[in-house]
Image (cartoon, rainbow, N blue to C red; front, side, top):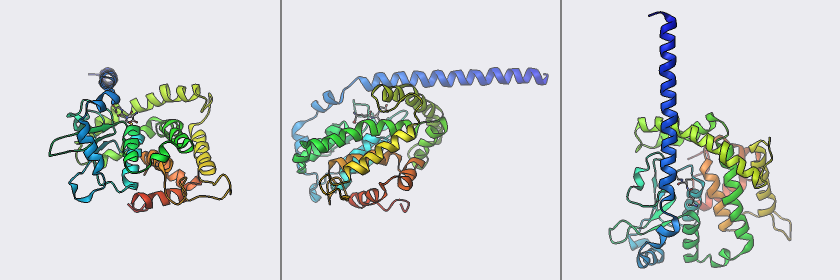
Length: 315
Ligand SMILES: N[C@@H](CCC(=O)N[C@@H](CS)C(=O)NCC(=O)O)C(=O)O
């Protein structure tokens, strides 16, 4: 066969593989959307055994109850981060289960298909569950004496900010190019439970999907909601939001003095949610930039201490 003929065959073969990968990626994405919508968090939570949920909540911090809630999460999911941050800051003993994001085999026993999920195994049985990060944090917070903060408008305003514009701008910045989206999956290299073929599949199919979702869905929505304008660079808007948190949430409005936490000398729910959201990018370029360029490095250091984490860079 001539060189030209071989080149043509390789080109046709390569294009066919590309089209198959794109088609496979699209089909997987559509199946997932359908599965994710098939059960709402509200419906799923209401199906749980309420007496077992109440028992679990009452024993959250009781050392000898044998309760060890399992947090099903993706390391890079900001909502999972808010639950982890709350559990850590409140010394709630728990175990993290890393969900493999493509096939989600770890969630096979659950009819709800998103993360985070908190599963309390009571009497050796699997369940009950609490799902949806806001529901989980608010339910646990109510139990652990945060009732006043749950009705404090200022605390709730920052929590909504963390779970809204902060998450969305961070996601856009995290997936702003194909290379960034690819490196967003680097955490899975450390997951021993995920086979190598699956890791490659995740990066080859998952990274382009994350990049396209950020570009075609997250970005236009941020523009529509007034958090960015056409032509804006996501990092500029993201940094502006972090500056807002440093200047408004971490400064006493009366004395104008800097506070250790939004909550004063102890983190409150606004601190925990904001810290939790940012943990989704811990170890990545964005987190290093926050530490180097924003005014949040000492707050992050104090939050690490409050959450019982090793100092950043030393873990
Ligand atoms: N409102 C939910 C949102 C949870 C959510 O959308 N989680 C994403 C991961 S960041 C998810 O599980 N998406 C479905 C999927 O990965 O298939 C919450 O706060 O828990």
